[in-house]
Image 1 (spheres, rainbow, N blue to C red):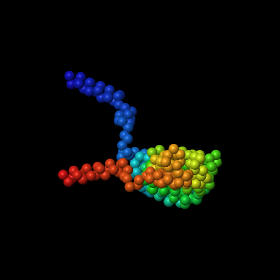
Image 2: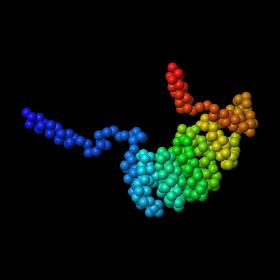
Image 3: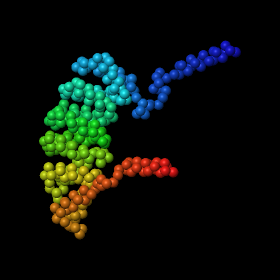
Image 4: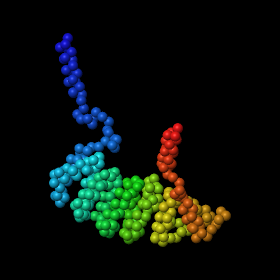
Length: 296
C-alpha cells in the first residue's frame, strides 16, 4: 500500500512538472504597477553602456555605482539615461556634464525625458531653428524638466507649430519668429484637451478669411495668441460676438472697429483664473471631509 502511494505521489510530481509554464511570465498576469521595477535589466544595460564610453573614463567601481544610481529610478531608467546621454554626447558637451544631466533625466517620467532629447535633437543637432547650444539647451530643459503639464501633448504642439510656421507652402516666417510663436502658444497647451495646435490652425484660418477683420499675418498671429490664451471657449466667444455686433438685424449693429474691440473683451472673459480646476476642488473637498472626521 505504501509503495502504491509513493508511486502515485511520484506521478503527480512528474505531471505537475510537465504542466509547468516555461517562465514565470506565463504564470501571472502582467505586472503593471509602476512601483514594481525591472532593476536587474536597468542595472545591466546601464553598466554595459557606461564601460563602453572610453571618454568618460569610469573605473569598474565607478561604473557600478553609476549604474546603481540609474537602476534605482525603476523601469525605463536606462532608456531615459542613454537617450539623453547620446544626444548631449553628439552635441559635444563635456562628458562629465553629459553624464550628470543624463543621470538627472533618468529619474524623470519617460515622456518628460523624451521631451528633452527630442526637442534638443531638433533645436540643436538638426539645426531646426538656427539657434545656439545654450538657447537649445535652455528651451529643451524648460519644456521638459520645468513643465508642469502633459509633456507628450506639449511636445506634439511645439513640433507641429514650428513645422507649420516654417512651411514655405503656408507662410514661411523667419525661424526666430516661429520659435517665439511656438513658445507663446505652448504656454496654453494644457488648457486644451487635445493640445492647442488644431485650435490655432482653425482660428488663424478664420481670422485670415473673415471679411470684417482684414489683418496682415503678424497681426493675425498676435490675435490668435491673445484669444487662445483664454482657453478653448474663447475663439467661439470671439466669433459669436463679432457676428452679433455686426448683425444689422440686431440692435447693436456696431462699426467694425467697435465690434472687434467688444469681441476682444468678451473673449478675455472666457477664462476665469480665480476658479479652481475640477481636480483641485475635489481634492479640497476630500481634505475637508477628512478634517471633519478628525473633529468628530
